[in-house]
Image 1 (cartoon, rainbow, N blue to C red):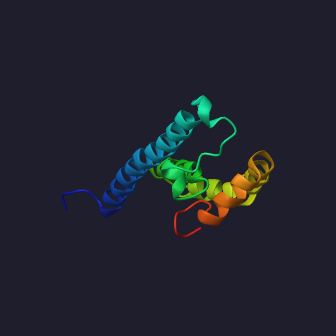
Image 2 (image 1 turned 135 degrees about the horizontal axis):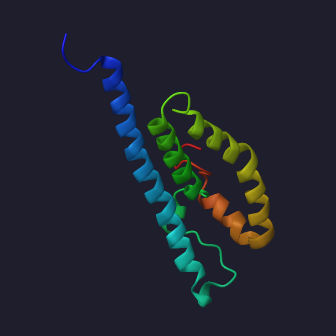
Length: 129
């Protein structure tokens, strides 16, 4: 029988999905970081916590972008890395990096951080986590 074997089509779909995830994840990470850098580079904002832009939706939205593009990279790389990259980084960020960063932000910004956490409840994934 002629044509592409079904496992090759599946691999192509996963690779294309991975490429889309890389673009979406990098866009989210870079956009959120650019927004924060623009805010921080303005001397009028010295000592202020940035809570606008993408960070309105989740406290560590930049990490979500990173997890998305790393998962996409895993999809492009293929087995056994397909989901391993994303799962590893999601667990690492949620269990290790985010708790450390939460403490740092509280120390640095105090009540600004406390208010932000009250109004922006999502830590990583808007409306979910």
